[in-house]
Image (cartoon, rainbow, N blue to C red; front, side):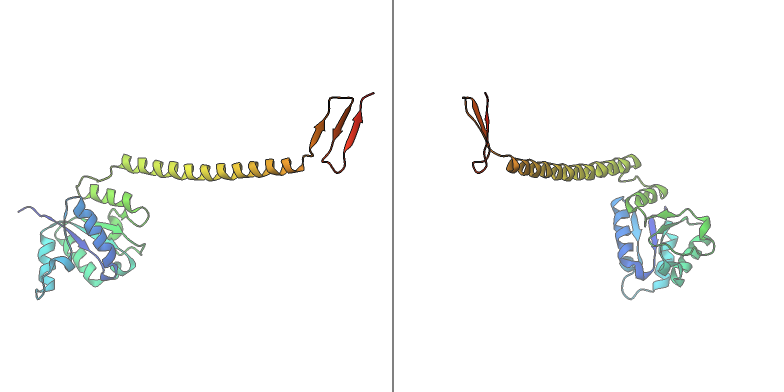
Length: 198
């Protein structure tokens, strides 16, 4: 019988994040096993977890300070190791590396979730929803988008500064009256200067 589950090992403290990760893995067509969603009421908890681990092809451990100190998580990892079930630590929050965990390849979800999820999906044998080239393209688009916004703001500021400068200059210019005779009158009507050509 082919093993079918991605077993999600996590601390109850990190339930919200674990559910998010489970949903994202389900979107990649993985059948994810979580104790909170797969153990019916009244069933023996340990027996169900043991059965689920036996039917899992990989154990994804949500790494956090809470999970590395959880006895349940340690038991699940120990069980998986004894049965040669691959273990993939997925870092939710930085934590001190437990004994033996440093030999495993860690996936860093806490730095860039989309990139980390992409690596996790690839490492457990799925097809990434966003290939690496797509992730890079999305980053370039974000940079271009923010660059356009910044340049637009700078352009508007320069435009308004130029407009205000021109208005200030125009208010300082005195009115000029020119007559065709031998005289030119320059002034604003209050203090005129007469220039007479001989």
